[in-house]
Image (cartoon, rainbow, N blue to C red):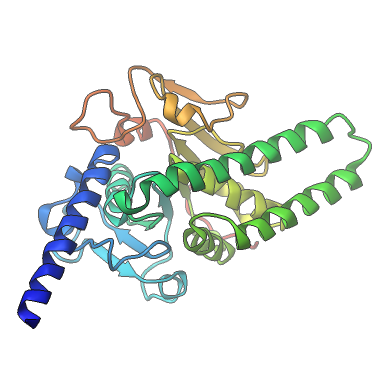
Length: 306
């Protein structure tokens, strides 16, 4: 009886993993990972908010190209060198999609890249699409509208500071209560709060772009200065990146109506012709992460005091 029960569990878990793999493959370049690497990534174990560090292809021996950290604390306390790049995937991704996005970035810059896991693939794609995607989009719109309003009253600098602080407090409270994907948000905020200058790149795709804008807004309001020397890149969504981040590039596909729904088109961005929302290079009308990043140069590595 126990053998039968275990067998049923294995079949169900295999079915769930295959469903997740389908969602990840729809949006992310999963073929950038080897079959052995993909077998190491289990969305049932590596939950939302965990971190994986991915090396460039063939940069390390097989079996050592992906390192796993269940939490931000374990990642920050690891003996590895501080991460120079952090990426966040978006709607429809599990740890598999996160690692695939990290591999694309790692291949371009030939360095290890940390990815914060933001979901469970097909297991929560509707929740992500109707919850987190819209929540962070609403947060992004509210910040931009507030800034545009306050710019009309430059003489009220103290009022601007107070209003931004109040808005940050409101969104922090909302994030603690209703924000979908709170584990991934907390992981990102915890990692960013510990950065002292080693970070060179923050990259998001889809909802991951809006999460980065959300986190940077709070870091900016808190007076964290080390992000002035960080290149911020968004793919598949145009966000209101704080003005304190002077290096920022935003890209969206010319066919990407999905990403456009939650984008702020009033800020500078680059349109990629004949590209939709997905980054899987095996599918037509993809947005190639590696091609886009060829024109994005990173700042030299330096240590700053926050």
